[in-house]
Amino acid sequence: SPWNRVLTDLKSTKDARPSKFRRAMFELGYVLQNALYRDVYRVAGGDAGRGAIAAIETKPPYLSAFFVLDDEDIYHGQRQYREHIRTYARCVDTATWPGFLDGFQELPLTDWQRKEMVT
Image 1 (cartoon, rainbow, N blue to C red):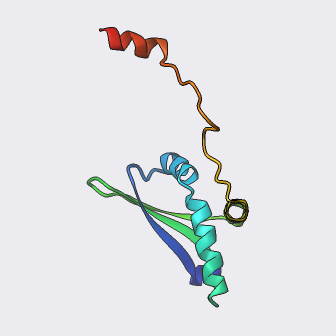
Image 2: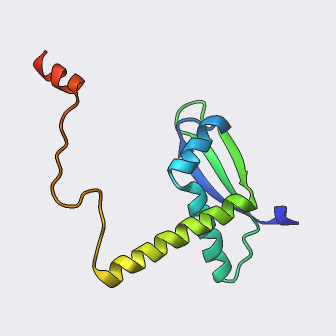
Image 3: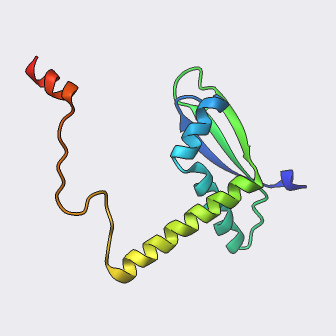
């Protein structure tokens, strides 16, 4: 049974409700991380079984939730981390490390920011 083995990643969170934690799971790359951990475990000779995330809130009453990742999500996490590895390899090979800016760029304040500076 796949439930005999569940590779679980423990995460702290402000809000463990599914509707809120789903966003954190996506934005913070938790599915990617779990996919990577499962693949590393498999390469080391283990059978990770299912992937899951245990979310525990950081403030009282410290509510928690347990989320099982489905195979499709793990597949997408694998694709994402493998693309990151390819990008890193290209950067190492070419000694080119892209960032947010290419040279100098202007970043003017917004109108409301300028108004705040006057008052």
